[in-house]
Structure formats: C-alpha cells, structure tokens
Length: 139
Image (cartoon, rainbow, N blue to C red; front, side):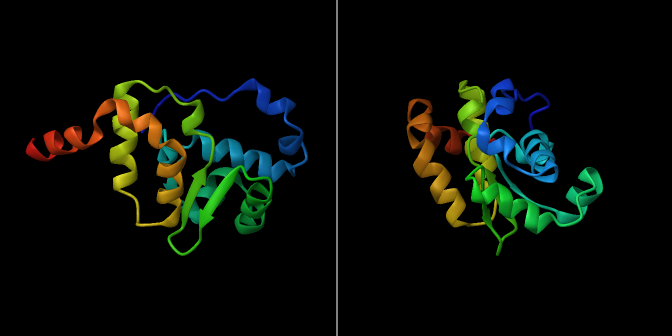
C-alpha cells in the first residue's frame, strides 16, 4: 500500500471529470488516494468504509457516474473496482511494478485483472516478474 500517490492537477481541466456530480468527484479522488487501491488502482470495495469516509449515501449510483465516463471499471460480483488510469500515473520503478504484480495476485479472480494485465503487460516484461515470483515463494 502506497503512502504517497500523485494526483495530476490536470484532473481539474478534464471536461468529463468536471461534468460529474460533486459526489462522483469526491468518490474518484477517494478511490485514487485510498490506501487499499494500491498502485494498480485495483481494490475490493468495502461500501460501508467508503460511505463512512466520504459521506456519500448512494455509492452504486455514484460509481455508475464514474463508469459512464470510463474512469473506473467494476466487477460487481466480486466487489472489485479498477481506477483505470491509476497505474498509468504510477512510478514504473522495479519495486513498484513487482509490487503491483503481487498486489493483483491477492485479489479475487476477475475479468478486471485480465483487462488490467492486457492494458499494462508491457510494463511487466522488463522486470522478469516470473523470476521474482519464484524468489518470493522461496523466502
């Protein structure tokens, strides 16, 4: 879990983002900065925690707003959320990329994981992630 994450100031120049309700803007910033989301932007959503921390009462309606502008993808069956471009804006240092690989392995099996890996597969190649997996198992 990252303790620091950069959020681009260009967000406030994005017409799609500005078209959102105040609740959807807050929810997006919460999802992007919440420690559970990690560097990948993938995390299991705990609606009670989300509602308590944001004060948003209708989480599903607000998530739908973010889905409609393609900022998040959801797997409702597994309560999994993907902040689509979060990893795009993350550091691509070996430590971060390998951490993301292990991060997604801890999540439920979901089509979102497949989509994430497909979108960012080239980021993982230089780091021999399979070698790192074996080394971690040996520890």
